[in-house]
Image 1 (tube, helix red, strand yellow):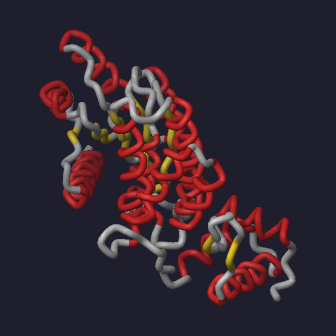
Image 2: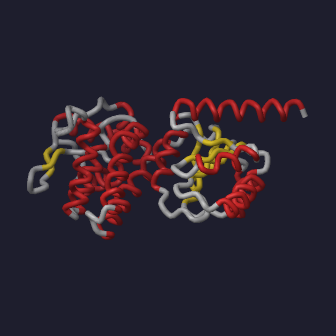
Image 3: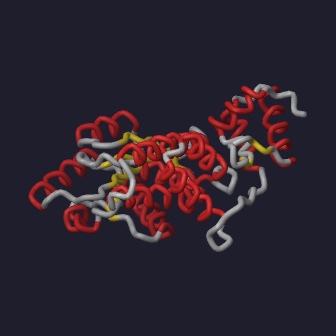
Length: 293
């Protein structure tokens, strides 16, 4: 019907979430008329010379949200999140990939993360801490969801002229999938997001600030270090950021507030809209100081 080979269809679905067909109980794909229309649009963009990743972004952004069969009070995002968790519990790699790909058709990238993928990650993490899933199950879910979030972040990046945010986890932080979600939010605000990843020491931040000249540095910390170490670490991060605005978020940020604010940093609000206001105010203040000098 579309002239696109089955191998290409599978590659587009796996890499870009286009299309995201329903599945039978035996995991056979069921393509709807809307799926076929998306495939044809993607085909036309690619045949016209557009890169497949960019074509997928265009198709996803212009497509109407595709409602999923769901079980959670009529909320398609919550239903998608539940099915992702269930696939992880079954230790079903193909089913997990399929459910994540289906979730990609629900709406904008940042909304997909905040209402479907992010809650699924949190629930899987809780189940692991409770001893209800194995390390292998948790790692499988992290690998699939992490690859998907990285893909979404690449698609969501604004143009080269956009402002830039440097994202990293504290020196002892290993879990950084949430950083991709933060990066998606920054992309929605017009920032290009550069993710350095886990266990980023102050020296690495200093080198990145020197080389990339970001507009802001955003750090995340889940478990704050003890007070003597915390003060030294915050001082080191503040020195690494130099004159660049910096903000710290995550579950452990509040405990570090006195040290962060003493060095001119920001502690991220729990309200997303307030975080944006914090950032814009900090950037405006720095621009005024530069202009005055």
